[in-house]
Length: 386
Image 1 (tube, rainbow, N blue to C red):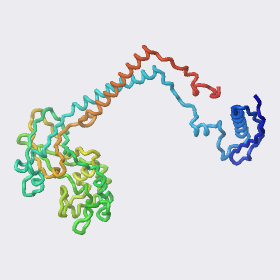
Image 2: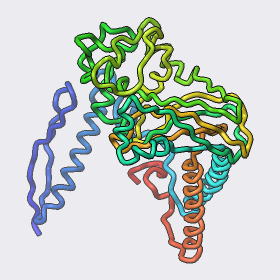
Image 3: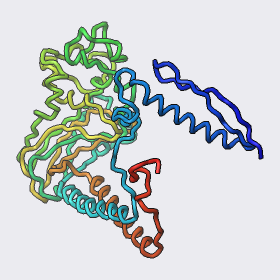
Image 4: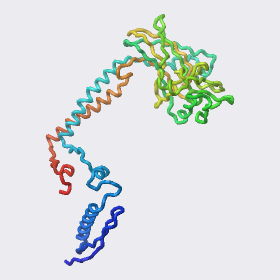
């Protein structure tokens, strides 16, 4: 087999330095494979000599410097080899930690005493059960409603009173954008088009404007235990940061709910927005169609087997869109309210990890799979070229 001898000029450019050119002889076999190998070797040699002969531009270190290794993600790092033993140990540790945490979370959730009472259907008179919208829209019909519930477990103060709405989409894009935060903070001079369609009424600006404020929840609740009333504290039910920074202390309701179409509750025009805590709670829109919002706090214990009488004013119209209304009395623990999801999530994750740990251990013992020596991995070798 004959080889061809060719002289090829090869130049290497390195930044602002003059190009380094040198002739190279490449013997070309019939297959052409040797030419590519020898040409690559020449390129590597030229590149090394250029890097060594030229000064770094802009003060940057050469390729052997820390900066270059950092930009190329070539700094020393811990790169564990996930052997079967490591994998089994990791799953075992996860299971040992997560299962007890899940049991603790479930125990805390089960200690919460909670009463959920739906009243939107029971509070409609029998004559209007077939036409609930006619009932809720007729102001001449009394909306007073009395419901009784029996307490199953001891409820220790503080007892939180929530109203719960279902099938109400506060996260709808048009709904959640229909507000003016500047107006809530500084007053009616900041009424703008973002409040559409509740921006003006009778030619005057509306404060607070927008659909969220216009649809303010306006059912009311009172409670009695036997012949004694249970006081509901309506103060400090909103976030303090909202009261102090989002709602102005010198901003008062103006021209609110004075149009022909009334959406929800009304506001006292003599009380600044920073003290209208019902509004502040309602304006913090919920992410899901089923949500709870705090109504007040009862600072008295309620014993088991006691009967609580709830005096409800059923004003809010959820019948037009098929919504549901419920009244919730609940206590809390160090973990918050009643929610089993977190506990079950930890239990399922921990149990699955233990199951996988046992499964992998059996497979590893019964059908062992040989694995390579970690010393031969590229990051374990002192010289990556060896």
